[in-house]
Image (cartoon, rainbow, N blue to C red; front, top):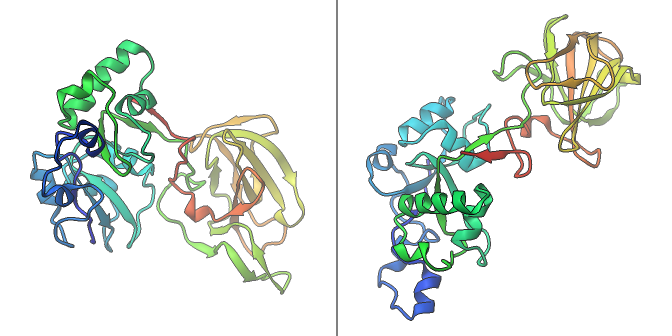
Length: 315
């Protein structure tokens, strides 16, 4: 694990506010800045878990670390906080994967623009003047910000981290289109390959997932069915349009249980069964993910991932 450990809130004043007031900056400011790596390269998670201060680190997943819940617990936080901070449902974890961890329950929010203020950040999470006022008090206490932050506009520095307490994310992400979410056997990955039937090198726009004939297939993400039926080399195909404009395709099916216009739910609606129809050498599911422009993307890179627009935050 290579960790860039920093104090999320080590100073009572933000740099911008202090400069505006003409206050001298502490001599050791750089040491505590969230912009400056600090501490040893290898950090024991218990150091964060036992600290009374809000700390964060970058954790590199090691072989054998397959549980995001266990990883969160080791750092003194929760799975929900880990998911919210990384905008990742963590359906999958793999060696070398980088995960931002903190030692408190809540989302670790990184200020992206120098124009952001405490009020603008609070407004991202709450609506209504009174609700925002109460939530702002929670944020100030959680981050040990000075009381003046409640009375006057409080500027934030780009790169600064704030703990946003109690944040959860309702994920609308991709899952593997099966009942089990353990990593399935991929018989042919995304990318260029030698086609086993056409006997030529060409782009493979999805994953071929080896499963026994008749295995139930579920919607990988909630959405509305666009197309069903025979489609050239795909054989029996289902295409689903998702609420963010992206689409998934499920090919070589033996059975189809949905029709165009049906609304399907991720992991709950059984849409068909694995088969070997179309250009296929044996029973498997051809699974595709296509972006809003219709371009095929690697499904493996989408599992458990959420864009800023697809995850809805709430307390």
